[in-house]
Length: 316
Image 1 (cartoon, rainbow, N blue to C red):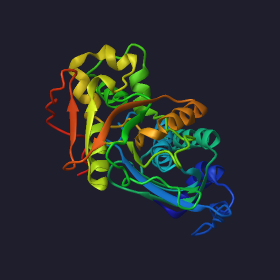
Image 2: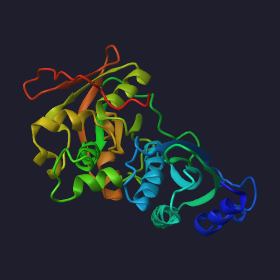
Image 3: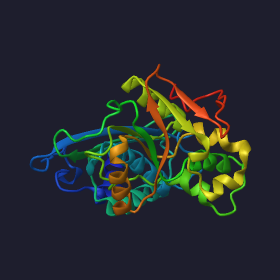
């Protein structure tokens, strides 16, 4: 990307997204003053065309999904979002209208979630559009929720509904009907569960991005526990239920949910429900952790295990 073209693109589309500390995107670095008495939390995610989004997806939704995927990671830590850094690599023939739509989507969600751009990098690439975003948030010191820390007897809880994102991808690929548009919307535009107070409630947690079973397996390994979940307790949307039982395995393993997956001691269940009510979201207990080798058992209504050929999405 020619130098003048790069600076012009930044001025047109990304400078309006910059907030305090970004130095108007005219320098090689930004300045950040953390909120007094808070601990910073940082997370990063990458998205590549043809892998994490479809090239034909609306560019505003691509921008919003990029930001929201990172917001989901911070939500799982119980953190408040603050600022972000971003890199954009795109082919030279990418239309200016694509950048305009992409930036407009970011601007919309910046207002919704109270974050601003600090800086980043733009570059040309011969390959597909590749995006990376690093989000910075903050928590009270020592209160961040980790993947480790669950104990035997903790309940397994999820926010929202499971499987909509994976089914939405099937819709986008023409493999599934979606009369309401709900499933495609959930795939293209995740709903990060920001604002749920987790400090002192969840003993461990993460977001569900690579599939419920696979991500629960991560919690099991980090906490050195086994987990049992009951299929009938996994919350499904009306649109997911309408897809039929042939899609159940996809719901359990498909990824792109961006819901929270939490370990909560029995004595804190009411506190979780109250926190969820304050945040305006649903929570559902789907199983429990117990002593044993780190693995996930999905049980049918009969109590028999459900055989799964895959656990979830693999990045490699």
